[in-house]
Amino acid sequence: MFDAHGDWQYSIEPPIIYIKIIGCFNREGVQAFTKSIFSDLAQLPANSIEYAIINLAEFELATADSLAIAKEYFHGVKARGYKQVDYLQPSLIAKNMLEHIWQGSDMNIQFYPSVQSYLESYPDYEYVKSWL
Image (tube, rainbow, N blue to C red; front, side, top):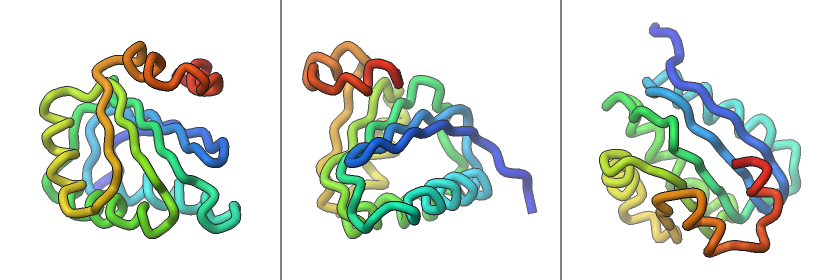
């Protein structure tokens, strides 16, 4: 068993979860990430979260063995009531990887090259400004 690699920060403000992904993730890191989030989300009423905003500015990708876990988690968010996932500042490689993982999920996924481009699209999201 390997140590978990990858770090994250998140804040839950229903109906939105804000996530910052940091570093490179291995299988154990993705498992720890999903366990942590599920633990906090389990304390909320079902379908409380509809939108995820994920900042990838410090994301350094993931190992091949972690992608199956990530895909399972991602494909389950629609069943948990999510309507849209927005990715901020993805690298080209991360964007391609995420597009592949989400393929076939029927989830509304958006990518924004910068925080500024995101805030221009959603100027009323005041809380996002303090989180980013």
